[in-house]
Image (cartoon, rainbow, N blue to C red; front, side):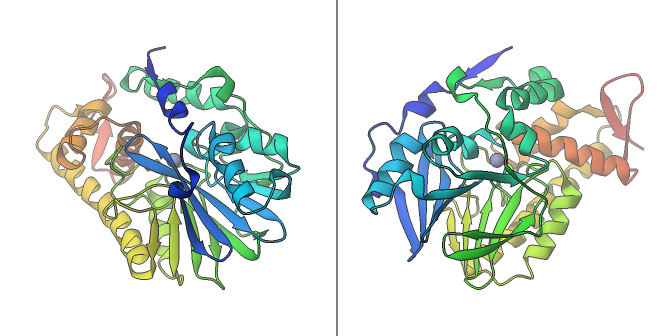
Length: 330
Ligand SMILES: [Zn+2]
């Protein structure tokens, strides 16, 4: 398989001063931001008598950030009782193995993403089978490839006690089939992982959404909740500088997420009006990325473009050609 080299990413945080990467959101909620290229990936530590970790960053996060941080607050890895993955992507699950080995924590994740969390090679294989040469598969070092069993399989609607707080699990399909948000109604805290994509982020300036209907419905639902603080997985745009957003900005991110997808769909519809000979998935992806994402050809862009094609097919705006790999206007 063609590969892109990512090893550097995993070595980056070797010698960091931990405090620079930690934000205390409230007395019992800490956000660790682990660098990943142009952005960071979020690890949330919820502190009570027992500890819980939401998302575990990249492969070396436990040794380089999480365990040293716990030491600073006078706690130990064995105090961790629950690890939750908001979804299956490699930059949110990398520390699972080290944490589970150092504690008796249970791993929790949504049932739709559990198979990919348990078998990381399968993630890569299935993405390869889906997009082939359109997207070279990132090479993840072999030792980072070990999946972990998901003991607590979620379907949405459950209540989870994490640290001192009680969270509702909100299934949020879109970015991945098994994305979840964790919502603490009493505290107005929403931990959203990559569920609420905004306009994408600086490293991949296009939202990655593979289920447009699920995404739209979940965004609508979340917009009715009281959110005082939203902790996202990355610095989603238009708020590119922080993954932590307060009330008004949080609601703006939700609204902008829905608007962004609508803009993409309208642009795609107009694109097909002017292309009587139709276009392939790659051609539409390239058009949309030129238009909205600085021409960057991201994996997220492929997922989103594919979802848009299915949406336009369902609305009978386009039809897949029988004789080629193109879609054209009906
Ligand atoms: Zn993700």
